[in-house]
Image (cartoon, rainbow, N blue to C red; front, top):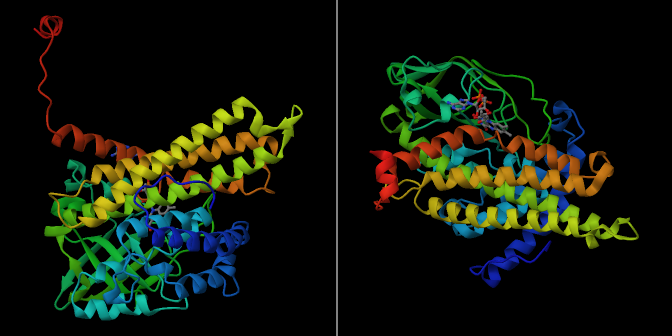
Amino acid sequence: MSYFELDLNLSKEDAALKKETHKFAKEVMRPIAMELDPMTPEEVIAPASPLWTFMKKAYELDYHILPFPEDFGGPGLKPIQIQMVMEELAWGSFGLTLMLNTSLDAAVAMGGGEQHINQFTLPYCNCKDGSYIGCWAITEPDHGSDTLVTGYPEFRDPNIGSQCRATLDGEEWVISGQKSSWISGGTIAKTILLMCQIDASKGHAGSGMFLFDLDRPGVSKGKPLDKIGTRELNQGEIFFDNVRVPKSALVVGPEDYEDALAAHLSMTLAMVGTWATGLARAGFDEALEYARNRIQGGKPLVEHKNIQDKLFKMFRQIEASRQLCRAAFVYNWSHPMNPEKRVIEYSMAAKTFATQTALDVTSDAIQIFGGYGISREYIIEKLFRDARTTLICDGSNDTLTVVGGKKIAETYPRQFYKMSKLGKRLHA
Ligand SMILES: Cc1cc2nc3c(=O)[nH]c(=O)nc-3n(C[C@H](O)[C@H](O)[C@H](O)COP(=O)(O)OP(=O)(O)OC[C@H]3O[C@@H](n4cnc5c(N)ncnc54)[C@H](O)[C@@H]3O)c2cc1C
């Protein structure tokens, strides 16, 4: 284990699970992520790529179905165990952990009828060779933040249209348009959870969620995206040209869409924060090890006070990230479908705090490495590049801050405090 973890709620069984996952992250994920990082996006997904070795090993061990209950073939873990395992996996690679969690179609289908469960959930849960890859597509080339800002007047603005629309034609939906080049798993996915507009009079709130397989006429895909970080994660656009899907493909209609999206975000944001905590820890571990070995001024860096201060600040940020992400994750994963209980602002706080932590910690780690920190010989520059992408993924931190702040301002109870005499005079 990289360092002592303060957690009063972990059982012996949890600790063993964490240890086992860390071994997988260290021995399988980390080396494969390092191999994939310098490759072109096309090489990453080529048949001979080590990506597929990773996918097969991860699927064999059920790391792709961590949140699935035993009824569907999942490991039946408690939310705290899912959170803990996900942090460990992301210590190995943020990008590969995201790759294992793109199949939201299979997860959403769990809440649907027998037909959806048989078509998506069970084949995904039973897949052991890494071949079932799904994706979820909400963002569009012209609408990124627009599509995610639930609870905002702009989200319901009929003047802000959508580039992907579905219309009902008899017993089938006809889908046309495009989703953005950010779709995780987009160019290799076989199935999709597609968020697309149905009722334009309600703006983005008039959208629906569709589940279908991508192997149908009218679907095409773009080139895999080239980017600065999380290069082991495949991303790319998907185009829909009069794609016909059965009426039953619609699992959430416009009447429930905004609430379903909020439920979805309350879970995924805490999850992304959790991965970012694992990534930050990876940066910390590298920096600590390097500081123990590099001698300057006649002694190891770790014995210099300014390095100890920096390490302590990094440690403090990571520990705070974990506690916030764990609390938001466990709570919101226990009440996702209940709008009265769900506290999405905690997941927003967790995601924005932990991803900023990942960026700060990996940047401080580079500083500790000195010149070697920017060389490709060490992993730390990769961790820094990966961390940079996390501030945008699943909603930009700026947008989430705006929405979280608005929620607090509008819905949190007022404190009635007595104003001082001076205050009364100033407000008079
Ligand atoms: C690693 C990664 C994985 C991703 N995976 C997926 C995926 O699987 N599926 C998917 O659909 N999408 C995915 N995305 C897309 C991601 O959700 C969007 O990139 C993100 O929501 C921001 O949208 P945008 O890039 O279009 O930026 P824009 O929305 O154009 O925003 C640009 C800037 O303007 C600011 N801004 C925009 N609107 C407002 C506003 N109303 N108020 C204040 N500031 C604002 C933003 O904060 C940002 O700084 C992924 C992105 C990344 C980086």
